[in-house]
Length: 472
Image (cartoon, rainbow, N blue to C red; front, side):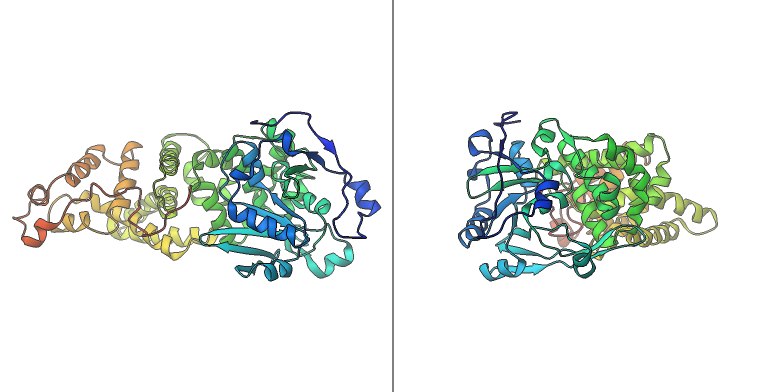
């Protein structure tokens, strides 16, 4: 790992900066002091940290609070990566943070925290979480008796307690702005060096507390190229059904992180490996079956294309990939309805509408994505019409490019006529006059001569939802 020496730790008997406050004997006994890695022994530089995050850290420190950079940003900096987000942990309560930063607001029901906004950048500031007691738990912490899922958790504590509330050891590292050292309570540095993803505590208990941690395990393993520790790898398939109880809106947030951040293909493979994918996309999983045939290759080609676009800093929209996941089940259901006497166009429209509704009950896809996604699926039948004014109107429609990109994926997977896909590709490169001749239409009027083909648009459904560009 860049700039970090193995075996460079120093023991540090921690004492709060607040006068008269010492750790209780029970916490000292249960949780060892951190291993302190001084600035001279690690590679993290303030030059690589967001200046806004530094501003938050220093203002908290100057106000007499502890202030640490924490979580994925510390992990990524140790790995030589460029973090997308910078999170801060402190002993200041949310109301204290709000008083220090006029540009902040408090959010969250499950756990209260502060967002400090600097233009488009948000620095998330969380108060150290506590382990709690039975008395505290009854008032500030709520756990589902049926599933063990943590529903509400506003118990504050010390850094020693906070670390045991985090999910994975690689995400439980603290960069101390006071002396630029790294505090490691759980062996997270060693796990990063070994490229190992290990959950803190008993895997079954932690996954029951919050089933989304299983999705996070798949995502981090995919993103970092880490190996999931054996204890977690064994239990996740047994607990995967707990995902069914996660609120659909939260699952959409996880979908975005899994599939729109540059590691969609590996995330998909991790989800399939651990039996999680069928709890996000049940109809798609049933359509895929257990094998890795042409259906699987169709999905993997789309996921690889999405990753390539993110890597090239090109726009992506969730509506396209969601549509790819649903295309197979939609096509099969439409074929079954057409066999019962429904017209092909109506069968496809009904199947697309029904499966979109079913999927959004599992993952709460916002209407600004679900509506164009459904239209993209319904438009696939329009590619069979290669003559006349309706074909020209389709070529010039708002949803054409997204539907065309899906056609190309289908053709590459053998799901659509490759010759037809090539014909539409060629048509887009023609002048307006040539397009009209190819479509069997008369000479274009003045307005028609001004129109251009769509071959130069950004692709991958980028014109389907204007302004929805996802960051890498």
